[in-house]
Image (cartoon, rainbow, N blue to C red; front, side, top):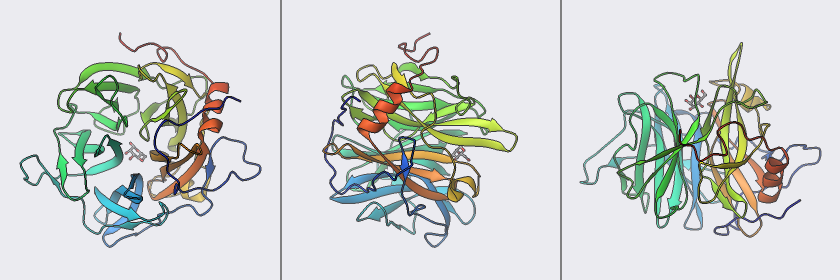
Length: 340
Ligand code: BMA
């Protein structure tokens, strides 16, 4: 087993539980999942597919809150320990760069990523159909919404936590107007978060296993390690009872993230517990955020369960990277630079 290190900050207060006995996979669930249950705030019936980040020694989160009229919006949440969350009653108020209110019609599947001294919120927004929304803040009080990076349709925008070669780097999954039955992960960069280009294909659906045969999409912000960018993502298979969403893992080249170095043939987490198997949409595990501690290599992944709850699962950088390398299966187009 190779020793792998996380490159980044230490996070001594990362939520954590040790691996239980007789857990055969590289990822294990928090024992008291789900950490956010139904009706967590007035007017909010379900919270899931949400993102968190360390903030001032504690934790801040951007939550996908399904309001009681069934429309999703983003609400801030606050936590001392990353486990118990107080979710704001009011949705996030976005303004444009001139201070004018700039609210999305709906907003879902947020990611929250710190690059240098700024936090970025990336989500799926309405732009004549689903596309990627982008906003920035330094204090979670003034939250400035920027122009949408892409044309419709697109989902699963995930910003890298640092610039590569001076450029902001954004993963996305081009799609269609409905419950897209296809999709691969692409990467795009920008010098200023305004002009986006250098589009590259990162990786495709498929492979020997069936769990990611239909579509895949980015998850938490990739984690920088001594082996490359560790990327968790979701993969979807179609069954006679609908879609099943599982979590996969891959390692991307550190300088050229459109090149996949290793990609795990099997899922690393799939719906098995009641809160993943049964809810508003059954059989969904949908990771959107991770916390990591560079001192110990601990990783805590936040995921939406059954479009109803928030769960946490754990791994270590050694365990997951070695597992991905040992079960590597790059498929056609993955390891290339992704231009056609
Ligand atoms: C996808 C997204 C996710 C959701 C999943 C399962 O298309 O809308 O927000 O978790 O479907 O319903």
